[in-house]
Length: 318
Ligand code: FAD
Image 1: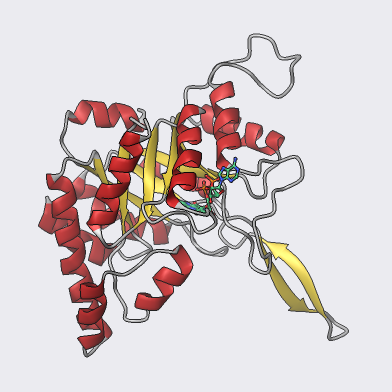
Image 2: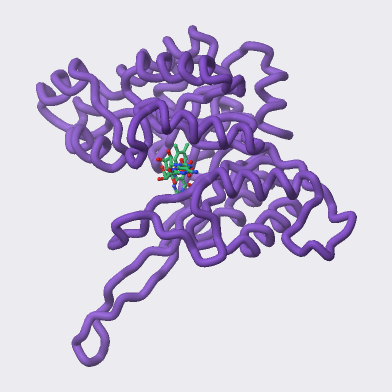
């Protein structure tokens, strides 16, 4: 079923969903099931699986010189989606990125997803590879998420890259896109970023999932700005609890978000990471309750491999 159909069926009730990331190459599905098994009692209608582009690594060769090679450290998104659907009977939402894909690779990936009866995709651009100063599109691939959305929307109309294909099967993907309550870091300002988000919706995006944030007022202001700009699709808040003191710096630097003063002040007073985790759980519970109260369609939790913490939060909220 489509993510947006779940929202419509819920009729104003706030759903929950989880996001997992594929294990490092060499890992097994067990690590995913270990995260999801304890969370399934909360009946998430869908689970997102992130996609990870190839990365550059430097390895020493026999002559003692370093060679730059590229490897995909976390492959397996589509297989994981299939395994999740098979084990739990819920929908899986693969993230599909522009980086590393030609348009034809994208088309072929979408055909695979369609054959697997996967009804939803989150269409995103992807970040710059490590050691690249900015995002470099793959030759023959897309530069921005909006172009990926357009390609998926065309396949939904039966239009394939090869114009010789007549009466091509129409896919029926529900398309999610990313949104940034605190602005995407490359955008000159919030208004311009919002224009770009709007273009993803106009191109065929069906709903928005946001970057994590720790200050609900930023999310509420973002929703208001979206509505003012004419974006009328569901907006799902993405949530991740603070669990370690060092995340006070690492989360803002990695995800370009800010930490509210009160949370930061309380965190530095903590005597151990265990105390920070307790504070982070309480903070996330209170964020979740307020968001639920405001009538968001869904609370989307970035699990990052930590089901115990997410479990405690969801238990307190539902
Ligand atoms: P875009 O919408 O293309 O925007 C990127 C930047 O370009 C923005 O600054 C935007 O304002 C600007 N822009 C957009 N269109 C134009 C245009 N036409 N002209 C000029 N500028 C433009 N990354 C992964 O690698 N794998 C994942 O699984 C993954 N999942 C994510 C899930 C969520 C919910 C979120 C919020 C992010 C996720 N990311 C993931 C990170 C994401 O790939 C990065 O944030 C990336 O830098 C931007 O992706 P986007 O889809 O928002 O890009």
